[in-house]
Picture 1 (spheres, one colour):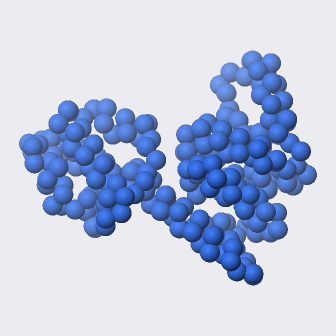
Picture 2 (cartoon, helix red, strand yellow; picture 1 turned 135 degrees about the vertical axis):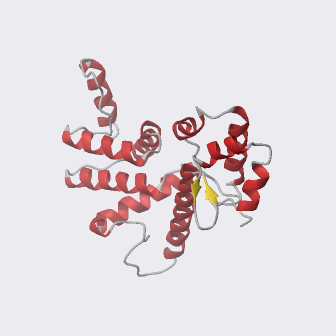
Picture 3 (cartoon, helix red, strand yellow; picture 1 turned 120 degrees about the vertical axis):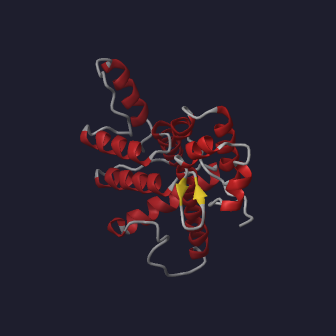
Length: 223
């Protein structure tokens, strides 16, 4: 492949892989990570090139981290991020094509069937419009969580203004660190507390004044 892929750099995953690597092995790791921008999977020939200065012990140190695939080798979190980004771009492309058709049942195959309905279509179109205009990088998992949240608010008779939804998307991406697991925890926690916005659970919730101010700021976003 010769495309220049984009991927979301996650410092936590990077440090997890590299914090115990020797200097030469980390250099090889970094070069492989950059090569993923052109090839999702690294061939054996490419691996040999990137590791030619490593001794056998250092090579095994690196191979312990790399994920072996039929096509070659990959850094798991980087390859996953690239594939999610490709799927996301494809779904946006299909969505734009679908706008030219008069009749369509689903805007994108990436959307869960249990979220079908008129409100879902309206929420999703607005969500994608803001994401495209603001150039946010929103992975499919987080997109579905936001749509679930919007459906939840709609069932309560509440809707977001466009500027409020833009703020919600931006802060959700930031606070979840684009991690679907953290995003799910935020969604479940906020629903269980009947909050007006999406919040992380705090270990110490003694500072009720700050919490009340945060909730008030979110309430100001509603119509």
